Image (cartoon, rainbow, N blue to C red; front, side):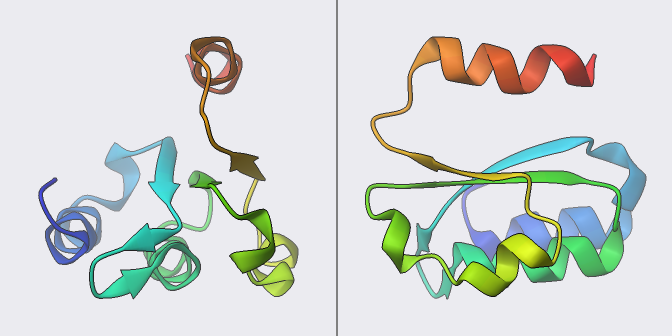
Length: 88
């Protein structure tokens, strides 16, 4: 999606369409923490991974609320594979 708002709208209309979401912590207009909370409100089962260059920028409470993992950049292909393959 081009914007976080469009992604949230898409998920709100089709909450079961997504099994895994990788989201950057720094999105225009919204941070990854808030984005993840909104997605979880539509589909509590979705697995969300927050990607960031600064892991300390992620609210620790979000981990308690069901975020799978905070992944530090640079993101490696092997890391993406390990996240996505079990979802299939």
